[in-house]
Length: 88
Image 1 (cartoon, rainbow, N blue to C red):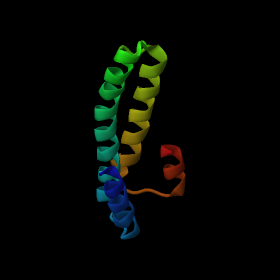
Image 2 (image 1 turned 60 degrees about the vertical axis):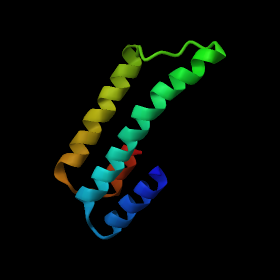
Image 3 (image 1 turned 135 degrees about the vertical axis):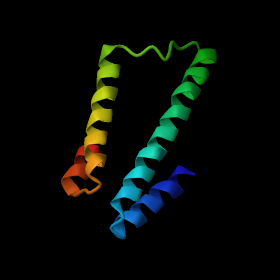
């Protein structure tokens, strides 16, 4: 399902509709992370692995920095290749 969303984001970007393209890409990534993290916790539980939603300082800092960088890039509604590299 998310492959189709990313494909439509690329199509909108080729048509110079960066606002829609960035919104689709960020929204799709948020949907994946909101689904995947709790599922991984539930899968790790019966396997005997310790995996929780209690993020340590490093993980929380990395997440916060990536959110700040992404919001700065999306704020302007336009992009170039260097901003794409930063997002990767």
